[in-house]
Figure 1 (cartoon, helix red, strand yellow):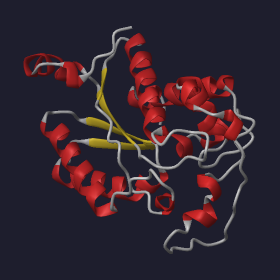
Figure 2 (cartoon, rainbow, N blue to C red):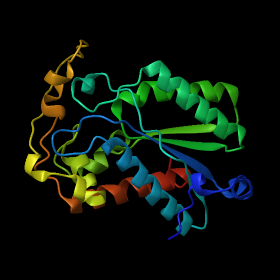
Figure 3 (cartoon, rainbow, N blue to C red):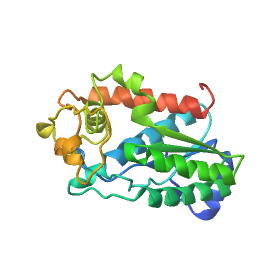
Length: 242
């Protein structure tokens, strides 16, 4: 399978193929703590792999999508309590992603999929998409939060969900097992009735940088999640489901 990467194309090559694609996918994530067992880039590794699978599934149906280089940094206020987390202010993320979306719209893409891998990005990405929708009324931006929008399907595979939990750990075991340290894969679910915002709140809400028990994660579960989510997104792009 040959995967087209925009960053590897010349501008004439890009110009020739852009009118042939039915959608463009922009993966967005974060660099942040994911327990002691997962890499800081988990929230990018997952949506990027899902995007690649979507591209494959769409191509098998005779259509084309284009996967853009990912946006690595996101809004991660709570997890900024842990070393290695790079927190971007929500207004900075909104403006940056909005500029990228506007450029994609100006290139003529009518369907843009924001494939998000990080919870803290949801509100800035929503606002960025709304900004672009105002400027380009004929453009549709699909904001897909893979772990959230397909929660019921994921819970048919895993017993629970949470930051760096069973679902995310399973996905990482399927795509980058060499980066997962299952000897450190332990944690618990922390629940709060209301959201409390204060400095270093992540130490309370995400003890050791996670919020779930990842010990039951397996690569097999991860493969099933990846296939379920990517197939659903492919069907949405192609208009095969609402």
